Image 1 (tube, rainbow, N blue to C red):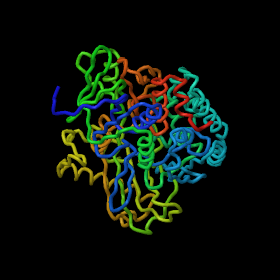
Image 2: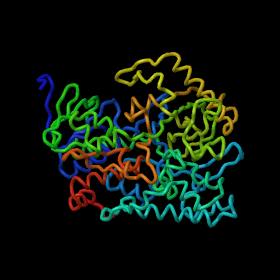
Image 3: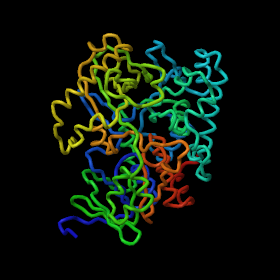
Image 4: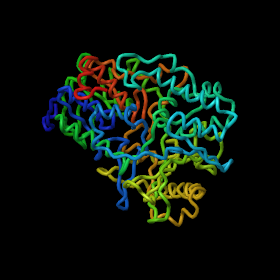
Length: 510
């Protein structure tokens, strides 16, 4: 043992401070466990991180949330965590929180909040397809009902037959109207759609909460991290930054401790909230050949994102209380491939941040588009973080600038003379997301999920080691709601149902 390193003892060590780590850490701390959360970077929160440019707050990954109205699922989960009192949101536009635009049709199609409003609004655009729209909503609700923890039912297990069908199979049963299909699937940037391969349950569980109610964070999604940090501190948990775990030691079938550059952390329980492949690589070589770990190493991750954060002139662009999903063609909805040639970008998500209530003009506008890590492979050897800044080279900056110009051309479709409104712009590539968030190849959506092969990517929270558990976007579902549910599921596995229920409902009767 390196005697220059300090030694620490806890009941629970959590590796990574993304949402899954913070939620599971809080619940275990409330159960009386001595918890430490280790973060390798400067900021806590993973995809909840924000950053500031030109005195404006910009979001890394959380641009809006669903299910936050009283009694809805995310509202109830946040109530269990006792963090709602610290959070500030505003509802997106009721008659069109998401607007799907196809340049080939020069038309915008709105998703309204609430099941009935959703149906009625789209039925005006597709009067011959009212029954199909109703079938779509009924199907989404049926899929959500098949996953009890989605509705905070901690007693029952999910119905596995709902894992099999692809988006294509279900949508083709609902309607043969290709334009309507594209409109219904138009906000697929929330989960990265591959029409033939993506299971329909991924679509249903992701979009349902937004249809119920959609909300924008005021002053950014990092307020969720700050709220969780307050509760963690209240319950005695420790959270330490600049502590990158470099290996875990195993004795028998248990992890004994993990090691960082300057410390050893011993515990009875270890939870990994970082990339699962990275987690496996931290284990001794003798444990990396087990079937589960070989299966995880073979899994493919979803795409990353290229984002441009525009700072705009005061009073130049009215604040818009919705999100624009922009596509060149109807077919571009079905796949996330987006090579950086003449048709780039094939799709864009355009959103703005809320800096205060009753905002009249936009301060910032963010445009995001899918991107494969292959597009930045030339620079993959470079790394750049706040703690260890470095340059990727002039050719990298020129490459990004060329893409920004192409994105501005598409932005001007929605905001005429947009170029003249720009004060400054800042980009994030898959390399940025890799270095700051820690996802493999900068991915934003966890492992690819395949219809008809659900066993490949249904990763259980319990590993094959007795005291090592997994949480985060690689387990079950990604996103705020998906990761929160997965963290609750993990803690239920650790504590057992009876203690788990006592921990999450100390004051609430939900």
